[in-house]
Image 1 (cartoon, one colour):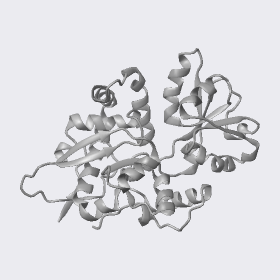
Image 2 (cartoon, rainbow, N blue to C red):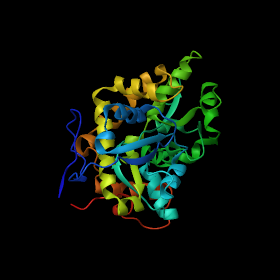
Image 3 (cartoon, rainbow, N blue to C red):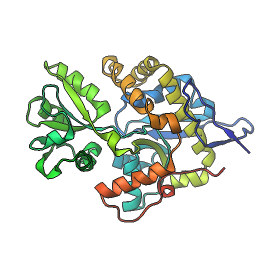
Length: 330
């Protein structure tokens, strides 16, 4: 017998459609290793607020949150059982399942609209993707915003071959843009807030040319291993409920989320998160997709997501939505 998962906060989005078994006798909390996709910050502040608010404890979960080292590492860690749960772009999971048979599946969306953009200096003549022709775009290896740029440019009616591309180490890209050595930088629109703070330090400013909405695909998604789903679906349901609790709490009080990540993460500076956290939360949840579906995947949209990934990086084998997204039995 199952009951709807608890929902915290005042959001009107549908509750997560995962079942939670009736509680039995009191037992020790389940230890869970949760690896982020990258360093803590922005939208991941919600997890630390969830710690303080009891979101994980209320689900009998003893969580350890660790930093991530990129999408590929996150998939590897979960697939091999080093981490129990992680978060990454749904497109990365689609590619990993197709190319390497990675035994992982997404269990809930966090960012329902793709945040891909290009960052430019505020005085740049580049106002849209069509203006990129004849200019240089920089990116790091594996940059998701760069991966989807050819499709975004095509949809805008421009010629991707007329854009000069350069690849550099992630740590060097901001400097290249601010020094005028590249004209644009492939970036998530949510990251431009932090980049602008860096730019202001040298008397400049940046803005984003956003195109992710034209792709209409998912981005950050919580995922776990096929083994976890098969052997402990109750924990999967409880973890999803806890994550939903963290984001409902953060939406209700973004400032508390800022306070929480500063308190929990050594060296975290509050000014760096004061804008990034509210901006990231707003981007993730203030949109029509989340309003319609909440923390539940629209499987038709997942199918479209697979088709988009296949267009930009052709997949080795055909996939169905159920190959990459876990849908619990009623």
